[in-house]
Structures are given as structure tokens and as C-alpha cells.
Image (cartoon, rainbow, N blue to C red; front, side, top):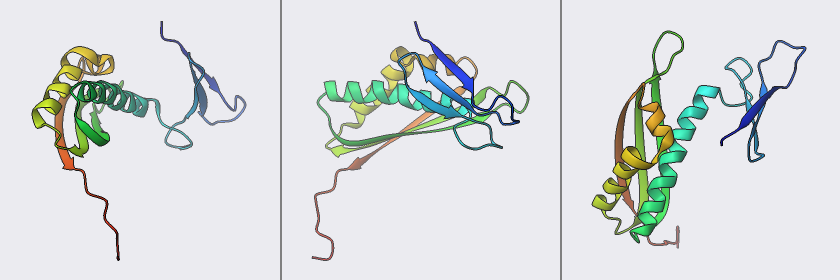
Length: 147
């Protein structure tokens, strides 16, 4: 079971800032655009999607013995104009740095994440069209600058 709670930080004020607590005891701030002290709840969905697919992809790449030295997932989401303003289109971009990383291995890992493993992606796909891209950046040899 997944659990969480959110608690209003200033009950007597006009702010909409909350402290979120995950079922595993982790805390973070939620806020709206006016307060701007924490992520908006919808931003957490985008972060969750990036994190979910990142966990899957790096795990698969490591099983395939790919030499990954860096990895980043970027997500951009367009929302519908009217409430509840769900995601309509999501762009996911994987940037993998490494030595001799196989494009086919990366493509296969992303596909497995999208089609089988990523629970957040499965939920987001109910309202949004997902577009995924990737790039592989060769790892650079350590160089001395100005030497």
C-alpha cells in the first residue's frame, strides 16, 4: 500500500503551503504559484514520471552491462486548458552519458519502461500522449584545463 499525507502549514493565513509526508517518512513542501516555496502538486506528477522511468531504464542498462557514467531524464508536459487540467501531451527526453553505450540497449530499456514497468507512465498515458526521445553523450576523458 502507498500512503501519504499533506498538512497545511499556516491554517490561519491565506497561504496554501503544505508539508507532504510520504508513507516512508520523507517530507517536502507543496505550494501554489503565489507562494512559490515548493513544487505544485502537478509538478510532482511530472517529477514522478521522470523518476519512475529513470529507475527502470538505469536498472535495465546496468543489467545489460552498459557503461553509464551519467543519466538525466527531462520531462515537459502540456496541460488541457480547462479544469482538471490533466496532462494532454508529455515529452520525455533521456540523456545518457557513457562509454560505448548501445543505442539499441537504451531504446529497448526505454520501451520496457514505457510498456511494462513504469506505473506512473501507465497512469499518465490514460490522459496524455507520450513522446520519448533520447541521446547518448560519449564520456569524455579527463582533461586538464589550461595545462
